[in-house]
Amino acid sequence: MESDEQSTIERRLADLEHEVARLSALAALPAAPADGAESEATDAAPEAAGSDDPLWFVNELGRRAPGAVMMAGAVETQAGPIRWQYGLHAEGLLANDWSDLARPLEALGHPARIELVRQVMRGAHTTAELLQLEHLASSGQLYHHLRQLVSAGWLVSPRRGHYEVPAARVVPLLVLTMIASS
Image 1 (cartoon, helix red, strand yellow):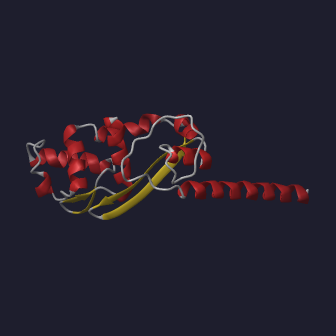
Image 2 (cartoon, one colour):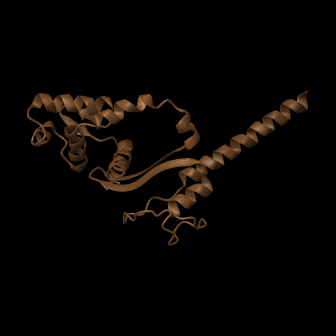
Image 3 (spheres, one colour):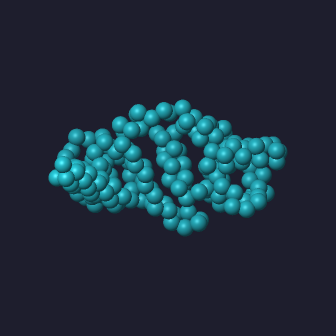
């Protein structure tokens, strides 16, 4: 009986070590190229990262974390550099209930709100600066839209009358704009 417990522990430890190695490899993926080159669909064999392969990111992801869906970015902002990546397995994404995703997406679904987020990312951080936008007729409308964006987590207000996009939301926002414009 004691050897059965020991082999179970050893198996679980090996599984855990394998998962840590997989997650470490996923976290070590290189940043996307800064030149904005678009990817092309191809059946080419995976090549090493850093080669001239237009699908280097996808090929490296497939090698390191098969079945994963990722978004990543390395961007410069007024607040400094942001290096960010996030990945999940497609199987888990498809198994989840997507109804909870409606609220954060809905918050970005109004032209005034998406413009507010863009302006905050471009450097307009105060309510006075944001009131200058053409999409807003009144301060009441501004505060209504800001409340929606803060509630959904797209903006934070570190102090009264000042708004920022949280660092963890910069790349997802840029990815969403890429999706919408493709």
